[in-house]
Length: 278
Image (cartoon, rainbow, N blue to C red):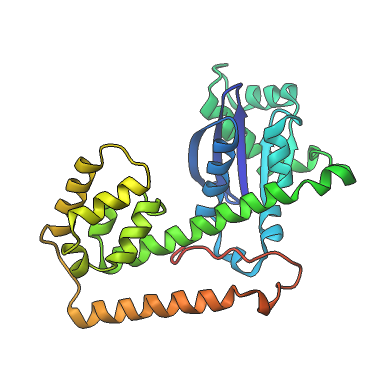
């Protein structure tokens, strides 16, 4: 399971992610709103345990336990509709925990996020989860749940892409700022390996950046070209060819696996597969 402590303010959330052994996996300050909840979903996806590979999306989401000092509002609603187990903790109860574990009396957002995560990890049996929605409210869960699934899928694919590029085309990780950006995907499609990338014209890079509405396209294009044409350590040609073949094979296999004629898995939803090595 994963446990999230969420210390919220009017315009941001300080969150801490810990595993069931209490190890701190991540700390972030997230903005209030759709952008923040998107980054939270991505953070959970990045640290998903390997055991989640055998679960569908709903079962995996239920293994995420969130502690937050409120039980209402759009943020809490988004957490619940995403399938997370959410505990709306009473601020007075949290204050008692704080006094018991700290003698300084100093309150900090980071420390409170950790405290909330520890409360739901160790003592959630003494607290109540946020009540489920009515039938009508349940009917509108489809959109937030689908939003979460798309983010998890995107994160999974980006991590896989990063792993593959690190293996045989590390210059791409330096040249491209965001692996899931439109211009990055377009340029990788045109030049998916070091040899073809070194011959990629500046005009093509400029066109890709322009199509993605990027600023300073000339400067960015020059920077990308400098990285892609610089000398670097490379895999021997036979191994690079083998890696490209394996990458293409995995891509075709994954595409066939997601065709609708295969039908949904038992229980509905799609399994979340962590990146290699997680």
